[in-house]
Length: 406
Image (cartoon, rainbow, N blue to C red):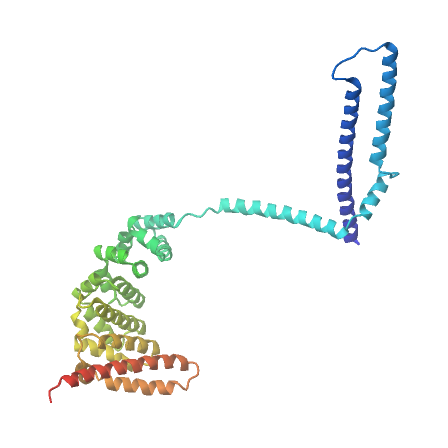
């Protein structure tokens, strides 16, 4: 009932508006017509003329008659043949489409709501003018450089940088804003959480970024990070090793510095220690694979002697006994790259590292795990990698046998 009443009211309003517009237009035209008629009766042949008193009286009478006719005509056109305004409205409503009238009214209402919403959004945007990444980085670095900043403020600043340095452009701007020196300084903070987050920031910024790698190396960040890898705090050690790996990945200068600072012994200590956390083991063998791959691609421009050291190689091969599939996969990837180096010897892998036996034990382990439906697909992928390693190993052995004099 309310909806029908509203619809009728809307229809009446719209019809009235349309009709009144028509009336105004008609009145204007009639008034212009009357004015033109009067002007024509006053002017003849392009000039003025004199009239007698009688002629003037006749003219005034004619003018009055014309005005009366115009008014009558106007009233007739305005009324349109309707006896009252209510009659006109009823006619307008009767000849209108209610659905179209409602649609027009709804469209107008939606348009008003949309404009109101746009205004609200604009006002909100003005209030929420967010600072740029550079401005946020400046503020965070300022907190790190402020000696009076609390532990909470420093941690907040580092977490902010951790997010912001992920885009390579922001990472490149870190040094321009004085951020690299500030973050490296926090590696010496007495709080483990601050040191840990600082190492994480440097690792994130250095990832696949030669420019940042060079800057961190130039500022002495690598040596401190390598010392932190030995920390008794597991989280600190893990994040530090992550940063070391990111810092020297595909960076020959960094890898040479890593070797000069006994990086090979650092990795061996982790890989040969049965109590090492699984996360440190994964990151260590992953770094070994990356170093071996870099040497393969360097075409003898880079030589890392420890990659051919039999003790080092054994510490890698022994990781195949792990029951952690992720670690086993990373270990196979490292062995695959090490086998392809000209500086490694097939007989060392065979006789000292017992690689053949290790690969066979892995095969037996994977065969059992294939019964597990949840692990089946992943195990099959690792088995493919194991067979590839086995093939490369047999080829390397064949080359040795072919060189032995008969």
